[in-house]
Length: 193
Ligand code: GAR
Image (cartoon, rainbow, N blue to C red; front, side):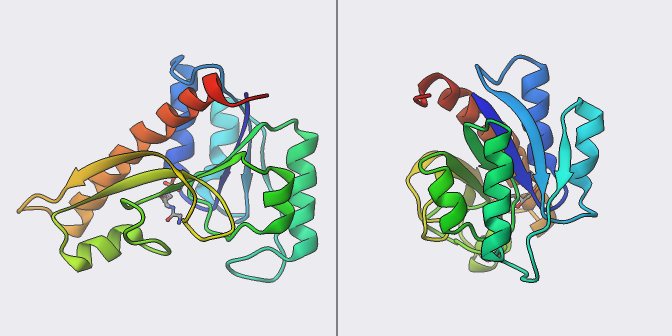
C-alpha cells in the first residue's frame, strides 16, 4: 500500500510513521512521499532524513482551502506517484471535490480530540478550555464534512490534576504518534487494492 503523507508544519506525526516504517511496524504500507503546502515547514526536512521524496506544492492564494485548479494539480501529482492511501498528518487545509473524487475512500485524517467532540482548529486547546476530564485523538476517513468521516481508531488521554496545557498537549501528541502508524499498518492489510 503506497502511502502519501500530507502536512503543513512540524511533521512529528509524519516522523512517527516514518520511524514505524524503519522499525518494521507499518505492515505492508510504504511511504512514497511527503507533500507539504507550506514551503518553510519542518516536515520537509524529513525527506532527506528518511530517504523519501518531499515536495512543496502550491495551493493557490487561500489560507485554509485549495484553489480548485491547484487541488486538481495535487490530485494529479499524487496519482502520478501511484498513491493508494493519502494520510493527512497535520495538514491544515480543507479537502474538497478534486482530491476527494480522485481518492474516494482513500484519505484519512488525524485529529487531536476524541471526535465528534472538538472538531476544527486547535482540538487540544478547545478540550483544555472546556475542562473535560479526558480528551485524546482520532483517526478517521475524510469526507466532505470537516472532521466528520467514520472513525478508524481513537486513543483516550486523561487530564491529570497537575497537567498544564503544555503537558497535556504532549500526552495527546504521544498518543497520536502511536495511533496513526497502527491505523496505517492495519489498513495496509485490509484496504482493497
Ligand atoms: C497534530 O496534533 C494533528 O492532530 C493536528 O495538527 C498536529 C500536527 O502536528 N491536526 C489537526 O488539527 C487537523 N485538524 P505535527 O505537524 O507535529 O504532526
